[in-house]
Amino acid sequence: MRGLYSLLLWMLSPLLLGWMALRARRAGGQWSVLGAARFGRYGPAGGDDGAIWVHAVSLGETRAAHPLIRALLDRGHRVLLTHMTATGQAEGHRVYAAELASGRMRQDWLPYDFPGATRRFMRHYRPSVGVLIEREVWPNLVHAAVCARVPLVLASARMSAASLRATLRLGALLRPAYGALTLTYAQSLADARRLERAGARQVEISGNFKFDLHLDRERMTRGAHFSAQLDRRVVVIASTREGEDAPFIEAIRQQVGQRRARGHDSGPPLLFMLVPRHPERFDAAAGLLREAGLAHVRRSHLLTLGDGSRSALEACGDAEVILGDTLGEMAWYYACAQVAIVGGSFAPLGGQNFIEASAQGRPVLVGPHTAHFEQAVSDALSAGAIARAADPDQAVRQALQWLDDPASLRRMGEAARDWVRQHAGAVARVGDGIETLLAQAAQRPPGG
Image 1: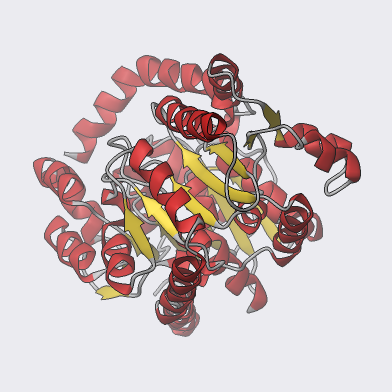
Image 2: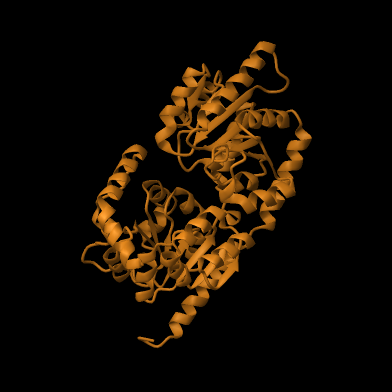
């Protein structure tokens, strides 16, 4: 079955590479779609033998992997970090610039799942252990690791009911791949049961890496200071995805219009922050704000004026919306706000990570579509840390109601912090498992 899959992959490769090129063109950034590394050709020099290889396919997985990567580096290990998207690679380069410069970490593209490419990757880098983040199980990649005797760990793993159905339909191809994983650490009991049905063995429940996040204290301090100087009530609408910007902007327009019509408002004036998840939609979101007649300023413009400067504060004077057109600043946005609405969940896209907002003690609103964070949403709802809204209009109205109720804001913020603290520890559990695999490998005789 894997041979048939590889044949089909070769036959369809012009279409698949064309799709990748189109995606890269739309998204922007350096994708190297036809680069040598994408086909497992890394030059004559040897790789970083013995490093722990962590594969984080895109931006979300790269951010999710941060706590584990930081823990591995703190334990003295060298790390090879691979990606498939430009946003994931850019995030890794930004966060680990010092480690990359010092040689403690290397960063590269993971090759496409062609048999020869994956073999060349293993032969070049010779990792001691491979760690796949969340759900990146590819048949030829796993087979190449098995042949190279590289133990594979699927970490912070999740599998929805829909993903399980798709996996079972391809059981003859994917079951051996899941079965070849050395260890699988599931985010929840439901994920663990689905992964076992998919063929995974040695499945343990570790929890979600996102609860072990290292908060960016410097950005949080700057955000809180900026917000205090503004003296405005702030709602951040974070990580919006395709199809969500327009209804949120319309909801903002309606609420701003109603308050204008009343001619007054209790408390400090309102300010919204709209933060699209993908940079290719920044300009489109700006256009929607102009069409809606909403005064806005871009976060990138504020940075050119000097973060927290008098000029930046004055630029926000008449603004009703700050458009978050920067990457890597989510800690700043959440620190500025009193309430967070987290997108990706108001269209059928599975939801986005809201845990960073909760860790900062921000009451959070999510939409009805949260399949990618099913267990976390259920637990947070039970803990009183978040609430669910049916649509963007209801979410904006609920956020404004919370702003008018400081006691509710304080109560939900405390519940959010407590909830995050109670669920921490996944990184330590997975890190200990990796250490065990390294110790077992060291005890094996050569060729054994």
